[in-house]
Length: 280
Image 1 (tube, rainbow, N blue to C red):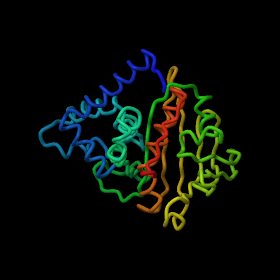
Image 2 (image 1 turned 30 degrees about the vertical axis):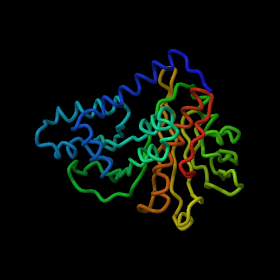
Image 3 (image 1 turned 45 degrees about the vertical axis):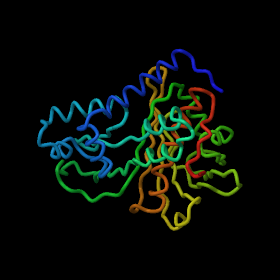
Image 4 (image 1 turned 90 degrees about the horizontal axis):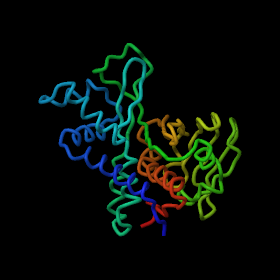
């Protein structure tokens, strides 16, 4: 059993307080619902759903949601788009809700992010309807160094502690192949490394093999971005290049938050979560 220090307990309390305070408002919950229905919306698009609020009011609510890490943003051309980030809910579910409530807490993770980035066209109007391909985006902040985070991502001796028991095999250098081997010895995920910038960025193709139907999907792409912020690291995971809402897309939205939360727990406490949503 892990004994938390006073600073760790304070951090947990502040984190949970920020999340629940952000959720304790009907307008902010409505914003999250809107992003759950269609992710990657601009301020103008979100504002159009609130006849009782000004743009400034919507901006204030978005700021609170961003501060709680429930919403993250990415810029595309001249515009900024907002995305639902389920990782804080997953962390509360995994780390502080009773393990006896696991089947219910998994449902929280299903508030998945169906990210729909606009096409690379700076002349696209903010309020226009753009048909785009779905994506997932998740963000968390981990109290660790870039060196330790990078090592956890590429070291096959560490990955079983947070990647649902799967061992990473392969030399993660540009152009090389890799695979995650499950506890049963079968290939869990495989692909090719597209880019590897040490301590900063890892990009690879993704072919899932653990669920029926996924073998028919074309390879998608996973990007890990590491940004050092003081004595912490901001980790952003982007899973994109899906052809549509494929079997791979559907079966990864609820899985990534568990992996990220497990990685954060491992690096901050030294203990694995021992959490697997695929086990009843």
